[in-house]
Image 1 (cartoon, rainbow, N blue to C red):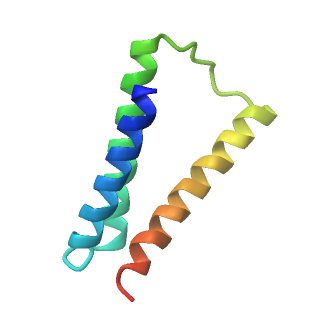
Image 2: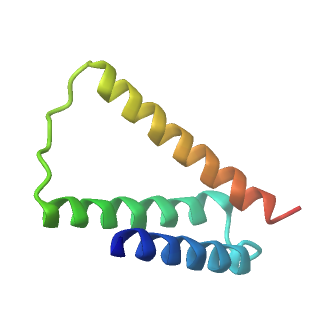
Image 3: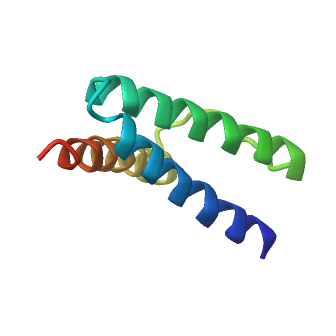
Length: 85
């Protein structure tokens, strides 16, 4: 429950901050910050809770994860790009 609350608060905070700085920085730069912070935070949480990490393999699960990652990146670019118009 706490992690859902923390996730919602941090997501809202990031949306406000990214909208305020979107005029000063490029879409790619803001998206790199978004992805970097997100990946770092998720890796820390994964290490804390002791998740089992699976090596890269050509499986359906890895394909779905790659697809999810691409959608996450594209969505971030589109959200930031929408602030400019």
